[in-house]
Image (cartoon, rainbow, N blue to C red; front, side, top):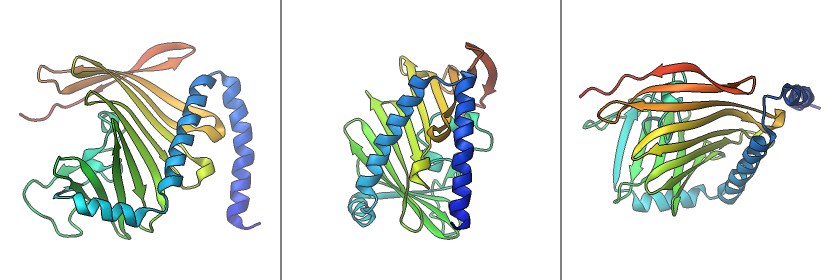
Length: 255
């Protein structure tokens, strides 16, 4: 047994004990956890379908891309400026979307992301620049569902995301990473609206079935008169009750 195998064996042994302790704590709803396990399995099946199709995805996107834009910053968040989540950068410390280059076409080394769009304005390709080359994400649209296939610089499919829309509104955002498939995780957000404005978000993170864990926040969204998000009231389950635990104040964009 090499060092890596030994480390993973020790982790598995720890995970059994951790899972039992988490279960006994009563913090985790097994119905919700089972639903997350099912979602991970669905996204893993997408990984299996596309893991060896990077050349085809590249060629298909290149044929349709008619416009390219660039952004700086946002490397720690999915897709940077075009992150699907409307709230992730607002409630997780240190996450920024970055900024778009509006006119200048930057040189390699000056930008973080390159985005490719088709003639209808649909995002088809995202390239994240770093010291080893590029990570690439290719987007596939099936009806009201958008799949994102994220490959690392060596060509391995490392994550799959799924965004579900209804009448043009984002209803669910799901993302699962697969550095080691048996330890796949999940990030899950679900949205509700009042009219055209986002009103509530169910925000689940650190979803790790191998230890039976997830964390959650229930967010109530407040807007200004222009429809910009200005406040997020966060609630969490504490001793079986949903209690407001934090208020996120958001600086509205400059007019």
